[in-house]
Image 1 (cartoon, rainbow, N blue to C red):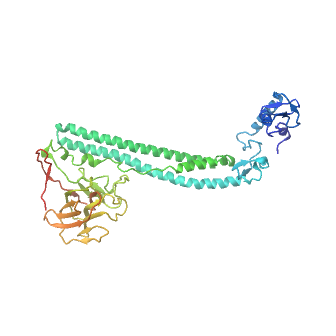
Image 2 (image 1 turned 45 degrees about the horizontal axis):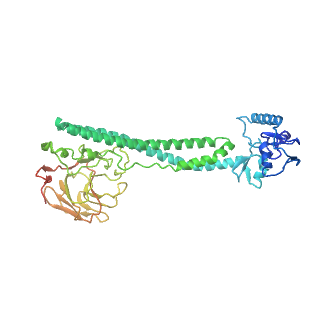
Image 3 (image 1 turned 60 degrees about the vertical axis):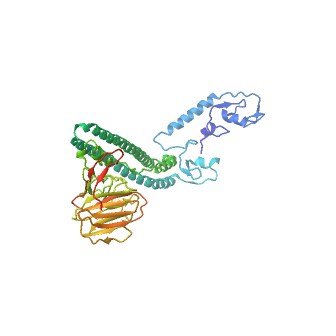
Amino acid sequence: MASQSEMDLSCPVCHDIFKDPVILSCSHSFCKDCLQRWWSGKLIHTCPICNKVFLSNELPSNLALKNLCEAFLQERKQKASPGSEPLCSLHFEKLKLFCLDHQQPVCVVCRDSNSHRNHRFSPIDETAQCHRGELQKHLKPLKDKLKICEQVKGNFDQTAQHIKSQTQQTKRQIMEQFKKLHQFLQEEEEARITALREEEEQKTKVMRDQIDALNRQIIDISDTIGAAEEEMRAADVSFLQSYDNSIKTIQQRLQLDPSGLPGGALIDVAKHLGNLTFNVWNKMKDMVSYSPLILDPNTAHPELILSEDLTSVTFGQKQKLPHNPERFDKHNCVLGSEGLNSGNNSWDVEVRNDRFWGLGMMQESAERKGQIQTGFWEILLLDGKLTASSPPLLPKVLPVEKPQRIRVQLDWDRGKLSFFDLDTKKHIHTFKQTFTEKLFPYIFTKNELPLKILPMTISVTKDHEVPLTLGYWPF
């Protein structure tokens, strides 16, 4: 309830402390704005209290009353010190209730006012406790989102470091090969290094942008969590006053979506190292060594170790590698660097029959994460027997001796994938299938001895537009 002194200093129209009071000749005072609104649209200006008519529009200020009001407000403001409990901004009473209709703290005077007539109220401490529980529920998915962001960032950091490691290793291999080509190949070497550096700069920049964006998300989410938890520790009134903004901010942060690692993020090592000497055969013909198949290290399972020239693979200790989309994570597989969707292609593989290996082709759309259900054709050494496998068909044991060197031949257009014993020239097995998409050569191994792609013997003829001929014996 307002005190007598407050009532004496209240405008009869707005019932609030006088603001810029004016006095009429009838000795009644009003807020200047209140009196002007009262007279607005009326032809005859009368006193709102005694109805005395006034012909003049002049509104002299009541300076004495103005000073009293300012002194009263200043005194009341000083009583409401920063460390004390917040007071109602209208009535300077303690905020003990929460209006459920307006969703705001109010005092007992507000409760009885016209603006809150027939509204529902609850004790402010009960409402604060309830809202704290709701805020805690909203914070949980945001904290889960933060954990996901931190995990994704960890993989991004590892990927960025792996890119640098790949760059350094690839650079070293390039330089070692180019040293063998002597000084006249220096320009070619520099061109290769420049291309590698440009790719490193491009992909490192992409990764840095991804990391920076994720860092910003993490900071925003962390700040939001910190601010919300700080608000939950605040006094009930302060907490409730900021509650809606806290919920809105949390909902906004929950919209943040940390995207996973994009495809093609790693250095395309195969592009830089694959068939390197063959590409300069016209300068160093006697030194050319051409491999028809280059393995892609970005697809290799972490337990597979590739040779520096990317033509052999060995089963070994699991390596710490980033989780990129191209890499197999369950099966010990590695793909060739180039897919095939036409023509007749072949390559030779030296196998070591010490444990468990497989050779074949895999569709581009086949899953690389988890169990590979279908989309591949292979022959494999399983339990000491050579077996043909192409799910969902049942495996078929092949009645042949275990070969040491195998030729894989793909006739994509005719839908034939054949395997031959390179030493005995005997046919091992042929899959017949209508191929509809790009196929990638692949090797599966748990051998401790390497499976190696054999180089082809190169013969070069140059007669107008006659193409390069790769010499190998046909079946």
